Amino acid sequence: MRLFVAIELGEEFSRRLVEMQDALRAVAMGVSFTKPENLHLTLKFIGEVEEQRVSALCDALKGVPQVGQFDLNLIGPDFLPERGPIRIIGASVDGGEKLLSLQSAIEEACASQQIPRENRGYRPHITLARARRPLRRSAQNRLLEAIPESTSGSMPVDEFVLMLSQLTDKGSQYSVLYKIAT
Image (cartoon, rainbow, N blue to C red; front, side, top):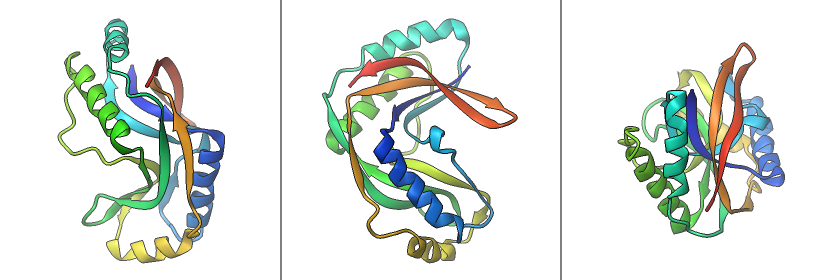
């Protein structure tokens, strides 16, 4: 089973992200846009896990210390990686110390289940599109100019989810396996 831990997005927040995607469509050639129903904030990509290990993983995630409700704020466009050709067009988000503490605790809970730690620092973003072939960094200005400056939004977060990702001929399909309070 291919799994990841995420925050599901509210309807209004998702609508703002779709507006960003729509603005980018005219200028971002050679990219594959994330389907609106698949937009989410990844907290931890887990990857393949045997079905018999999922129950123990859920128990470990249930043990994550609660940080309480917090606001997730849409900051603006993000282009990854930070240097070199652009592979991901994303939306940068901020959830303050609570988001960072939650993500760190999820990383620890997963490590307790022999799931390898991420060796890069956590950079909260929502993937809007992936470049089929990396885009030159010089394309960043053109992409930035296409996005309306008024793109902002906020939503309350009070839970995170363990998601199943299934690859189909129509692309990835996500389904919630387990919900946990923040």
